[in-house]
Length: 237
Image (cartoon, rainbow, N blue to C red):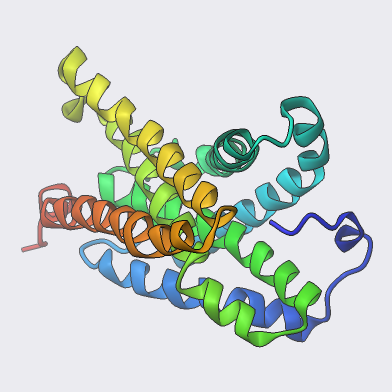
């Protein structure tokens, strides 16, 4: 996220905001389409996106304090100041929706987790576009950092909803395995940022290994959840 405190002092132009959020809205539309057995209400999905945007503003406000408290070591910056703080913020803001009774299948957790992540990414994209005055920055982030946010928080949303559904956690081992999903999401997010603030070879590692792995893991969870969606919402006679 851009480390420019004055960004909060002035509102970016509406055209910049639209450009920043356009990629997020596109990816959200694609994910929402996958929830085709009993699609989540679009207004609630957009509400999750707004909550994710709010979490981005909170992290931006807290970041100077986090940097002062935890220091600027490369690994600390990537895994704690960025990855852990951002995933906690996104998850905390969207948690009230994930705990709603209507959120009743694992695929719902992915949809709302992704929505919150894309709201967060939309704010980041807007600030980067406003700082650089280059549309290319938004287009680049649309297929990189924006998708990384979606992959990480979508996995966390999946884990939370699976834990909420008792049928998915019949044993301690199952709960332990689900606990690994948020941990792996933070580690992947941190690894991505750690690579980005390093030299060119490691930047390629972030884009060619960490990002594809994150998206592949989310795709596996989404495909698994979608294949079982009919058992939650059987076709009406």
